Image (cartoon, rainbow, N blue to C red; front, side, top):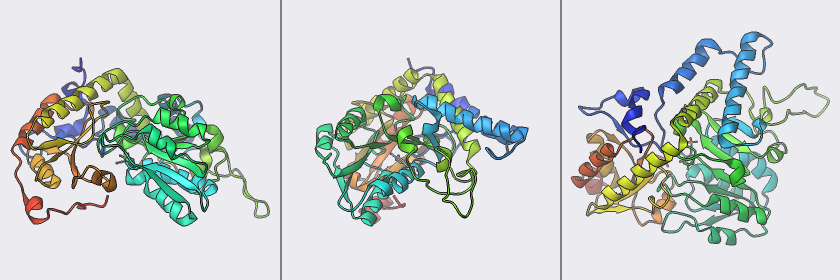
Amino acid sequence: DTRRLGAAVHADFPILARRFGPDPLVYLDNAATSQKPRPVLDAILGYYTEANSNVGRGYYQLSMAATDVYEGARAAVRRALNAAHPEEIVFTAGTTASVNLVVDTFGRAKVHEGDQVVVTGMEHNSNLLPWRRLCETTGADLVVVPAESTGRVNPARFAKALGPRVRIAAVAHVSNVVGTVNPVRRMIADAHRAGIPVLVDGAQAVPHRRVDVRDLDADFYCFSAHKVYGPMGTGVLYGKRELLSRLEPYQVGGGTVKGMTFEEPVAYVPAPARLEAGTPNVAGAVGLAAALSYVDGLGWDEVRRHDATLVRTAAEMLGSLPRVRIIGDPAAEPSGIVSFAVDGIHPYDVGGHLDRHGVAVRSGVHCANVFVDSFGVLGTVRLSFAVYNTEAEIDLVRRAVATVEPGFWTTEHPEERFLEAG
Ligand code: PMP
C-alpha cells in the first residue's frame, strides 16, 4: 500500500504548486536534487529566527543554544546512519566535498608512487576525478573495475582488483545514471580481507534506503543533504573513529586548535572539529536533521515500497513503448532511478519534449560519460523519483514519450552530448 506517499504528501512540498504552463509541475529530477518539505524549510527559518549565533565559540546562552542545535543535528545523523559515535560524523558541503576531504587527507598520506587506487566504472565524476588527480600527482595507478551490462559491479571482478598495491577503494553504493545497487557489503568485506579500506559514495543511496554504516562496515561513507530532502550546501562524511582520529587536518583555521604559540608545533583538536575549520553551515545541518526526521516519519518501509512501485511501473510502461530501451536493470533492486534511451532521438530532444508537458527530467550523460558510453548510447533520459511522485505522473511521461519526434538536437547536433559540464 503506497497510498500514504505520492499525492498524499504533495502538500508538504510548497514548490510542487508551481506551474510552468497549465499543468502542475511533475518533478522527476530528484537524483539531481530533491524538493524540500515544509518541516525542513521551517527548521532552517526557525534556526535563523531563534538560535542563530556562532557555534563552539561563545560563552553566552544564545551561542550555547546554537552549539546544542548543531551537535543535536550531528547526533541525528549518527542515529540515521547507525554510526557508533557522534565524532564519526563530519559536516561538509556535500558529497563532492566529503570525497575531496578524504582524498586530500587520507589519500595524500597513504597513496604514493607505484600504489593503486581502485574505483568502479560507474562512478560519478565527484567520486572519480579527486582520485584520478591524486593518482596523477602522486604517480599511483587508478584501477577501474568496469560495471556489467546490468549497470552493477560484479563483486568477483572487484575482488580480483584488490591486489597488494591497493591503498583504498572508492565505490558508488547506487548508480546515479541507472539506479542499480552495488553489493557494497560484500565488496567491503572482500576489501577488508585484503586489508584495504573502502569509501562508499552514498549520494544516491541515502534518499532511498536506510543505510547502516556499521552493518556495511564502510570505512568512509559520503552523502549530500540536498538529495534527501535537506538543503543544498550541506553534506556528511562518516568515517570510522580510528581512521578519522588519525587524519591530518584538512583545511585549517578557526575551530581546529585549542591554543597556539609560535614556538611549539600546532596541536590540532580531535575529529570532527579538526576537519571542520571555520564557521560551519549550522542551518544546513539543522535542515538535514529535519529532513532525516521527515523521512523517518514517513517510514522507511513505506518509502522503499513506494520507490519500488514507481521504478517497476516506469520500467514496464516505458519498456513497452516500441522505440524505448531501458538502460541497465533498474527493476532488479529498485532504487529510485529509471534511465532510458529513445531510438533515433537525441536525449535532449526527449527532455525538451517532456518539459513542454510540464515534466522535469535530466537528460544527457549525468556526470558519468564513460559509464554512459559503456551502454552504447549518446546519453540517457533519467527519471528519478521521490516520495511525492505518483504512478499517474509516470503515465503522463509514457504518453509524452510515445509522441516524441526528432527535434533540434537530433537534426542539428546529433552527436553533441555536453550541453553542461559533467
Ligand atoms: N555522487 C553521486 C553518485 C551523485 O549522484 C552526486 C550528485 N549528482 C554526487 C556524487 C555529487 O554530489 P554533490 O553535487 O551534492 O556534491
